[in-house]
Image (cartoon, rainbow, N blue to C red; front, side, top):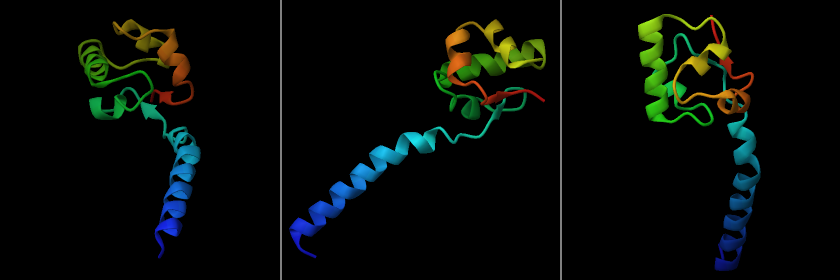
Length: 92
């Protein structure tokens, strides 16, 4: 393979990843906030490791969440995070 062809192939792959990467991120499976681990919760948009730990601690201290809106009882979780994750946050 020539250097020019290898470079062209590399650029094509980079472009493909740039286009499909965000689409793949939007195919995230729903997260049950009553059973998810901190690691799973941290995958939600706007929720990092520290906030995920707070969710787990709140759940352990107060029992299961009745609805996704109950997440706003956790300090640091607001309507913006719920909006970003609409359809991804579920309770059972």
